[in-house]
Length: 406
Image (tube, rainbow, N blue to C red; front, side, top):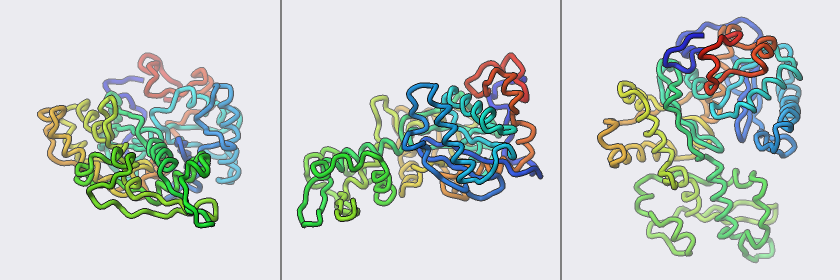
């Protein structure tokens, strides 16, 4: 394979494809928190399930020898319980994160080829898949997931990997903050009328994460930047039990363990998601990550990328996220760090045709309906010939050698 400055020559843009008449492939997106599975040509996944096996996180394996067994059990559930289809009958489109470890990717392919006998597999970057839903060639894709935020520019259908940016900012950080403050300051109303702090009553009630996630989805929101600037001492005031100068959002009562009610402070509802926009020790937030990626791009492409931003991932579905991100971006342009470098005055966001948490999967469904799957998928023989390795963007072998099937 030949290459110039592009690092993803295998994939074509979503604006020029033809539909395939083959049997619809399976489309699988293995997220850190949830897995989406279904069939190509369909508008939504057949199932959205936790990425867990018997309560064990699919990505939290202690040794590489455990991973094949975890994947076998998990994929068996996907194929035979949720999709009700034989893996031998259909090709597979895997919507992958660019930050997935190579070990995980190769093990996944090995299990699919050798244990489930999948005829052919094609791996497609999730950021690129998102553009298929909008029929775009060029965009700045911001994926705010469970564990991390990744920002990738796509220009004329090519992923600009040299400008890829990522940071450990996602729903997991919101969950940690919620759990910590709920245990300290969350009041529980018991059935006998008594009131106590959640940490004193049952400190393990939030251990599995499901309750924390439900509280986040149902009650949390992202406050406008103006209000945040007027209340810079959110955490300090909350920890010291002082009232904020601004009127606090209303408290919310959350049913707990059947006969108890947890009072969620209104201040915590808007304070918890602030971790996405607060600068960490490395002076990084979701907004700075977007601007840093734009700085890494060619000057001629920055404006068109800034005016074609696509937000994907479950975390961006929090109320107020898009507005706050735009406000932060415009404010940061006046900081010395970026002033006089980007020369941008506006940012525009696309609205995806589906929920942000399944946008990448839907793009994989569109991609799976095209004839590119037949020409770009790797078979088992090609996988073995390539020493049981799936080429990816971090693999330098394709620059000098010819990869079978590519």
